[in-house]
Image (cartoon, rainbow, N blue to C red; front, top):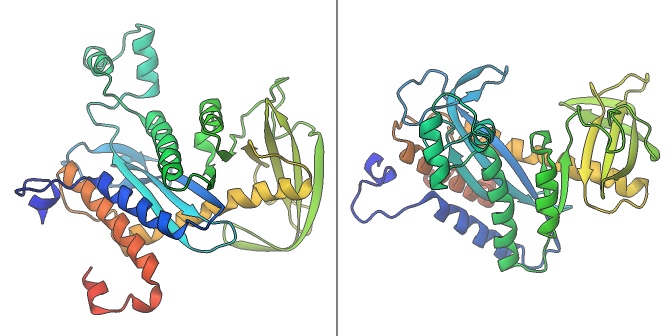
Length: 338
């Protein structure tokens, strides 16, 4: 099995990308009558805090924000508005210790001819054009999934949903040029375009309040909560600010939530829909929980990076199969063997 995973077996031409192509092709058959699809992008760290000798072992953060050993992944799932089913679409594993990895800072230093550690080696990688980092992986996945889906389902409307670490003008522009929609959470440090005022505190042009009998945040349920939804133009896009208060008027969020979108906002209902669309992002967290706790995503004992990448991709594929067959079949002897 190890020889197969690290591609030492005869006639083995397996690539992790083959799984992504299969997942997308299978999902396209189910989505051929659909009109809209939410594409949820999210990284997930594969934490290896006690490992030291794994190939290409990189650095990630643990749940407390501490730097530990591990690998990085970029993942994509799809959800149809109003439906519960999650379509696992794409997975990629990479390491920031790969010899071809260049951080954004290193790229800037090379382009401005500044000195830094490993400048000679990293400059050679840059010149070859084979380098990558999280930014390029993000751009590749956004463009790649959009073009592949449109090649299979050209009439399907796509909305990319991303968390605040992807808040950048480059991502706004890229998705807009693809003629797709986006809902991207903004960083709390964001300023207004016309002043140095923080978006989390400035006056917005439009607003509406919603009274909710029940409001859930971080697994806690609040009775009789209030949502203040505010919105205005942001350099040709829209920014929506959400402030949540409990029945006693105290803030539920530590700071208001900012959401950027290129969708049209006509009224309070459409602004509220932007918030509800972003909240679909929690569905991918459930997938990660299943992959890590149910599929042992972080427990692989392989030392070879090629084998680790392939094993994680196979686990992603198998998780899609288990999602497909439903809970009633998961106690079958064959499924347990898988």
